[in-house]
Amino acid sequence: MQKVEDFEKGINSLRITNQFSIFITGSNSKMTFLELSTDLSGRYVSFRVLPLTFKEVVELTKTKEKDYKKLLFDIFEWGSLPQRFSFDNERAKLNYISDVYDSILLKDVVERSNIKDIASFNKILQYVL
Image (cartoon, rainbow, N blue to C red; front, side):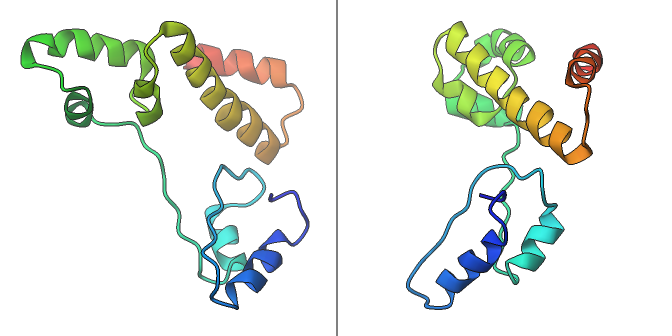
């Protein structure tokens, strides 16, 4: 969406009629939160998806106290982004985590920072992470 020139003007024109509720989702490597909120004339609300806390994971998974250690090691291995708990097999979890990594770190950061040597950047990220 953000690759369409002046897309925010089109969004604002639909809002003028008050007939529509418009939701734009996804990450945005082209514009910062401040730039986007300014261009959408104060009609911008950001919802950040953060990893769940241990307490939230316990509540979501209905884990008993005797299984906390097992759950903690599961979080160490797979993280605690909310969507990952909807997958019940390792292949699906791995695909999800890889997709998040690719879309946020590789696509958004590489595009926003104008990184040319993506292979080297990815190797550095693998080392750091």
